Length: 296
Image (cartoon, rainbow, N blue to C red; front, side, top):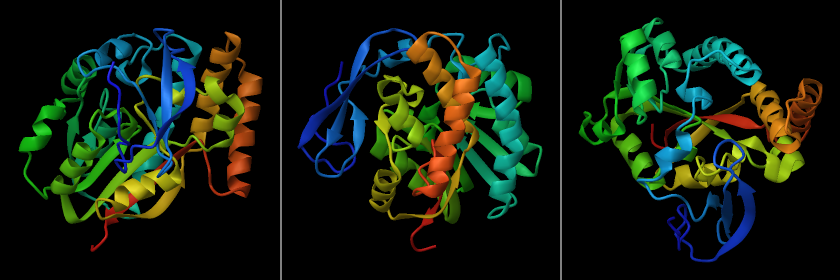
């Protein structure tokens, strides 16, 4: 296990224990979450070493790395994912209609494939070999391991996307520096993240599925992602909620808390989370941040 002595966001050393949360999904081990007393950033600490973290993804039930259709939650996830592809495309089209796209953490490639079919030159990055091979073999996509990021041509992408990926990245600062280098000056960066200030996060507490320890190394709020991006001269100009996420996360959280899925209760709590966010500060379960260079 790797113990961080400094905050990954501000490098502050005033760090306190925030929560202890089991890995409900796979190992059942307990993991700790720390909070920086200087900037408020929340992060998993200690965390598995680089050579050990892949163990916590090794499951046929890890949905973003799998295309199997067994299980109620997997079935529900894929219905929402297929609907969301068109939504994502329509959102992006408001700001960019074509060009070169880099999707970091593309999983099995469904979003990348959809964009390729809609006039985008698409490249993907996926560190896990199984979903990477699936994307290449089934969709004939250009998908590579993350090591290639350092050798790609600077300022060559009009759009870079990370859909629930940044929270998994080992070196947060290195990754955003790589993105900064690869994005065109007038390019668009899109980052989707869970929001640990949402109603469902507060309701389920330690059972909130989007903690997802230890796979999620960082736990952003709207203020901490803004602070982090400003550090690299990025500006958030638009924020969009992923309203379906509150239902999916509530469904998983019910399973973690009570040992079984409860669709009626999960639906109710997903609705309550979205209703609360609409009335109080836009704190939806997941948020998509649309970002550009400060000087663009």
